[in-house]
Amino acid sequence: MHSEFELIARHFTPATPGLGSGVTLGVGDDCALLAPAAGQRLAVSVDTSVLGIHFPPEAPPEAVGHRALAVSLSDLAAMGARARWCFMALALEESDDAWLEDFSRGFLALCEQAGVSLAGGDITRGQLAIGVTVMGEVPPESAICRSGGRPGDLLAVTGALGGGAGGLAAWQAGERDLAHPLLKRYLTPLPRLAAGQALAGLATAGLDISDGLLADLGHILEHSGGGAHLEPETLPLAEGLVEALGEEGARQAALTGGDDYELLVCLPPEQLEEARSRLATLSLPLTVVGRLTDTVGVSGVTTTRRTGWQHFHAVGQGGTP
Image (cartoon, rainbow, N blue to C red; front, side, top):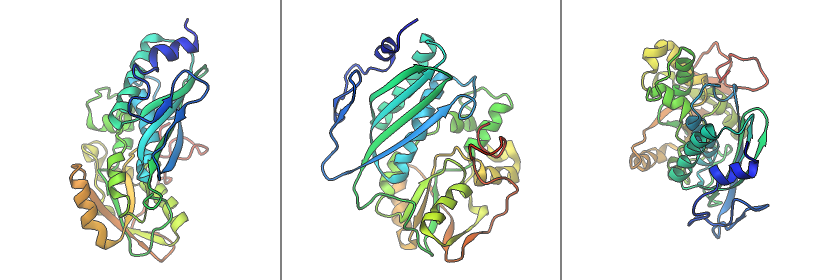
């Protein structure tokens, strides 16, 4: 058995701490010391991933590591922030070196891909859970908040929807090929960091789609006021989703399934082409799915499912059981 300090040193201490990252003191001390860029606001978010709630018990540890970081980074993407640093608190039932090696590989590979430095954390004993805090920087004048949307703004989404729910359904049906397009969307989502930065300064409001399009749209309406009209026939559906769930099931997954980690933004109509042009350089589509209105409520769609994942409601409402 290894101590938590040995596990941190073995699996989570970078070979070149703070390389070009603004970390002046990193893993191994009581606190990290960070050097934010001048004139930027610090954007901070935290998410916790729990065994059996956010990922299946049999999920590959490399995917678990990737996913735990990705869902936190997605919040920085939603704000239009540049990701800089992360911290991880990990609870483990036992010190399994083989599991930790794969887990840390997935976590640190996404750190490198996203330009993020792991600046500190903690390991303790308990039911498997991963708490990840991410920090980024954003110019104060271009941060994308949930407030700011206005009647007449277009509602647009990046990428495709429903893949998270479709991947969960595929896993529950016994699919284990990690190259399966829906399973990839569920287990190893990609935070839209570059897209968020590209849309900063254009979007009047926005967020990431973690709990389902309808549920997350509700957060925008709560903060911006007014209502929305959606056009469900325009929803961009993830690859293989219609074949897996049927046309109506695919549309419901896109509306309420969650775990997509695409961006939902409000755009003045005159900014649409510029927004699409910026995302085209990332090979990422931007699809208009509706608009904000001055009438309270959401029109244009019907659903028989609870709109989005809520942890303290019953299982089976569209999120991970």
